[in-house]
Length: 382
Ligand SMILES: [Mg+2]
Image (cartoon, rainbow, N blue to C red; front, side, top):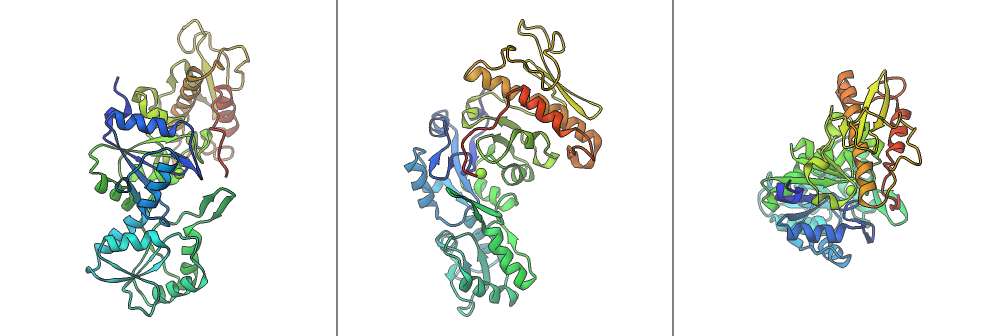
């Protein structure tokens, strides 16, 4: 069976929670990406963060052990600049409510960054920079209130820092939105321009989106009709995947970037695929039950180890290393298969509502994941 590295020509990699967490690489990421290149897969580093230009992002990646060239980095600033360049003549002045990342991206598109509403801008672009303060927000507000086109690189509510959550570009966009009553056009994930920019720049014909967030990376991939791999090294808990409505469901789930070197059959998740490896999951009257075939290899349902939560200490599920990881992932996939099908049958866009709305009871899902020992990766600062 071919691996994902052979099935897809370019990996469109989210950065935070996938490749690095703040100043540190995610465990196994540097060697997994090095091996992906050796296997012939090309890499594109796709970030919603517009504050730093590609050469600085590439330098940071290289510093933490992930070799990256500036031309492999795609930022929401570039996607925003392309949106503007498609509607403005070359040489047009654009007011930048943001930082260096946006200025570099505008110049690349033959647009001219300016910093004041009185400098003759014909459009406004807004992206995260830690240096944006009230004076620049006021300039942006004057320009947006005058009716100029307004593009935001992204509207992420938070930006992760090594001290925790801090206000992201979405909060700064909200300042101008509140002051003017207008809404920007948004370039970043999950909106289509971001993945379109990455596909245009990388020349991908069969791209794979790799991300840690359902509502940006995975939703964006689904909107672009591109296959996606969710890794569990960032912000998404396993139970979030199980309870995800159809538009947020990934094609594949893996623990971390080593999954690029697995075959699709070991990672694929699909509504109705409720028997995976040794596990079988079923939703019965709104309650999820997960059973495991006996260690002698008899089929699922035969000699099962019991319902959710009954995974004993002696059932062999622990083991160590790769085998335990595989078992846990198979359990998660089986649970997704059963819950997604039940949620789809219940309607409402496949939302797996818990107690009250009730496609599936949340506590039974958590108990099943505990029984399968499906836990999230330990290290993240927020
Ligand atoms: Mg991320």
